[in-house]
Image (cartoon, rainbow, N blue to C red):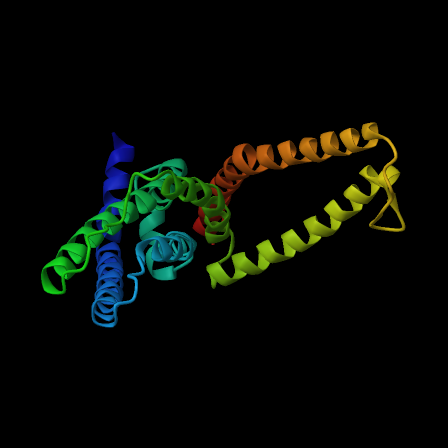
Length: 258
């Protein structure tokens, strides 16, 4: 019950920002779609549906930036830190209230906003310029596949939001870039060792003489692909969430006694 009160407080505190963000999304969709409908109507060119192109940008870029600043005012701002520490709730409840809001409430709300805004916009263009009615489809599999990817990658920015004290989004992107570069070099070294029987030089392939060599290579590649999928889908998000929670506990413990 106490967690529900903390979650409700978080929703109330974030309400103004999310309303402004939702209005911004609606205006962008409305203006771009109306202009596209007018141009299509009077030039005779085919109408380009813009919702599928706009959704990934707002989902990933907007969601990652939103997640990156989720803890900045409460954890690292001297003005808001005291009130957050004195909130009668555990570190886990404080963490989950923000994490669930950015990870689950944001993409679901975005899908609903896109569906509602596209319906209004398409109805407006149908009445005014006679454009065909094609609204954003919130039930298509590709949309929810992107949401699943968002849930995984968002956890990285959630960790960055709790770890860095300022410029959270940029520092997280730079840190991810550095980690990916190092991991890529390490993976290249492992691949060179694993595929040594099939290579000459560093990455120059040898000619295959037996089908068994090809089968062994395919099995090794499939095995590596399975490992990558397990790390990405099953391990990355839990690791980042748990580490971010530990970071919240650490900041509350250390900053409270300073």
